[in-house]
Length: 92
Image: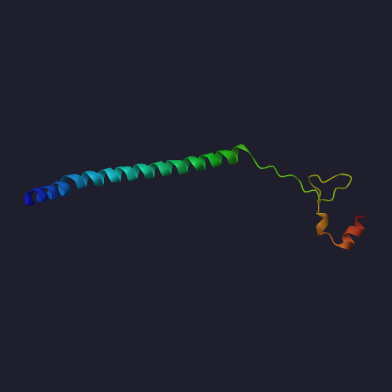
């Protein structure tokens, strides 16, 4: 009976433990690789979305538009930033 327990102890320490340890290591590396690839794929999708749809910014509606409008080369100032005196001079 004692010999059986000693044999079982030797068997587990010499045979079973290395097998279990290597299988656990393989599984953890598989899981790590899966997580890494998932994260890379998510970032690829985000980058594709950013490049495919550029952000469109509408011009602000509170800009002063004279007869010529607010074109390139003209200076357009938001009305809310003007003082009373400046608004009076511009007839606003």
